[in-house]
Length: 231
Image (cartoon, rainbow, N blue to C red):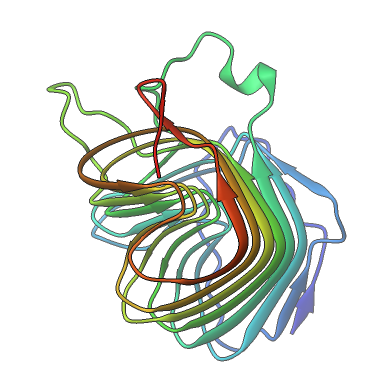
């Protein structure tokens, strides 16, 4: 029910964790570096494939994380949230060593739903004191977008309920729909003390914070599209 001390060296494909009996994971503020996850058959991908049943994840730091899902949801920390989950003090980012020699066509986080920290929320998520700074979504060789929906923190909210407090996302985003914090959202979203920055490229819809309705308090963005502020 409780475990600690997970490590990865980036040399082999990691199989995402899925355990519906898990109650809590505390990363102890250790750093998980260069985790690499690739999932086919529309399976969700991340450190955790899915979170369900009131599971709690806290104190996790990830660097240089690569996650790809062919048709599913992809996020550094978790592919998708189904049911109820609580996430606190979790962050993912790229170091200078991670990005040296790479451009925005390099795939770091990508899937149908692609988010810096969480791919998709289909249930209820409470997120506090968390952040993402990475490249979300990628361009195919024909310059089309691989991600249906990309978000700096969450790829998309599909009829879910999300409450985010004290969070930021500073990412390079590519998607048919792309939002600085959350991509496509058809759920109930409440945001408090939020900041987003970075750059966005999209096809049909883009937003500095959320591509959808949200209740916001003390939220602001300096996300840019082609050098111009995107709101």
